[in-house]
Length: 390
Image 1 (cartoon, rainbow, N blue to C red):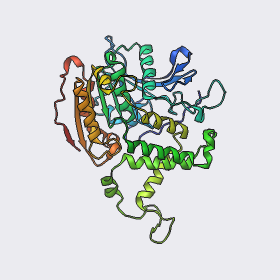
Image 2: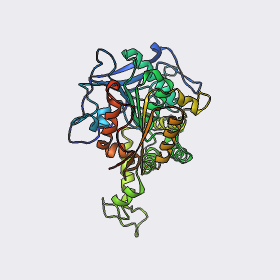
Image 3: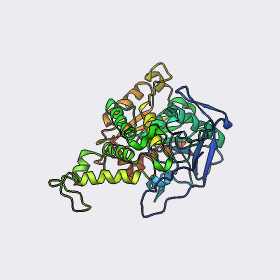
Image 4: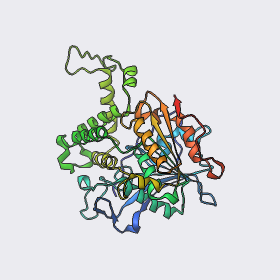
């Protein structure tokens, strides 16, 4: 396995909590790992971290699944859950983070060495599904001696994993909390396609066989810029940028084709800082995993899949999220309840769009506290209104 690209730490006033354990786990004891796509990976490893320790009853483990470009180091990107009366308390809970298969932060992915060729997988890395990712995580839980998770929590693609856990391993999940997560709509699929195309059209793409230090930076930066639009909302862009010229430099869009408006400067900046910490092939692999998320696959239909869930489920929509519209998440919660699932839906009112779980993370603490409680001392219903104004 190649040395992973290092994730950027979220800039805060407090240094992120360091994990008690950070290690790698070899799936199948080193034997091949079969994927839903029909492909097989050799020598598959998962990078994981642990904050806190298992208690004697082994019932205090909480798995937090990261978003698209996040990492296993949960306290780096969701510090608010670990601060000042934090709901994820390593003194009480055993909190786990696992880097997703296909990512570039330690687990096997396109930047890893293919043992069959001795070179990096690159674009030869096969399609990995959310179910594949979760099956690997379940093996790690076995290795760590965790029979049942008190909660699986995740935003975006992490929420997809939380839901897949609840369906595929119903006896191993007590609580499931997913925010901004449903199967992607046609619009979501279209936007992911355009991001991948921007990478592939970069001359440095080289069919996905580029050296790791010469990746298609322009295409990846453009993909990140497109994604940044989907993570925010029109209201936020209007409030922050309006029609002002770019704030850095003397730029006048009425006089020069090269001059930018402020929102363009922001998007260019987001792309520029992203290319140093993420890999283009990994971006393609992870967005494809998002595309293919479908709880019905492998079961007779979605209803039969949802009927398997025994966990309490909390689904959160964000009012200004147009990548995963709140109405789609509420509809999924309705289908869960119709299937007999103890499911609650909450809607967060925010101008921050899909990224609200990061930009206004403090407001997610109530939800995390709800699913992190000891089930023996927690009721089955969420004791708050279904709408939260931030």
